[in-house]
Image (cartoon, rainbow, N blue to C red; front, side):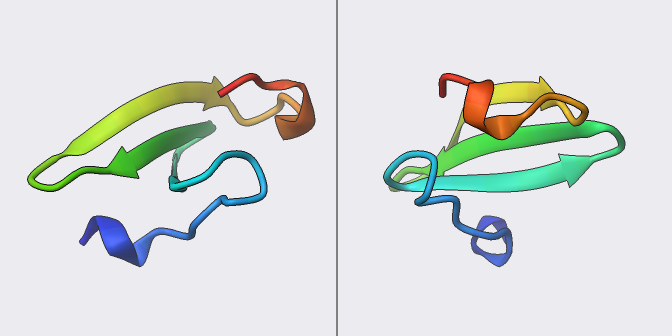
Length: 51
């Protein structure tokens, strides 16, 4: 199911993003798990976020 979320290669290699309410959840897929890289409030500009 994690592969159903869009890739955000424009922000960082291997990064995916899910939206939950007002938050963006950034994660990377690993061999047998998902690694959460960050959770950002949706009103922030993604260009200002360091992930």
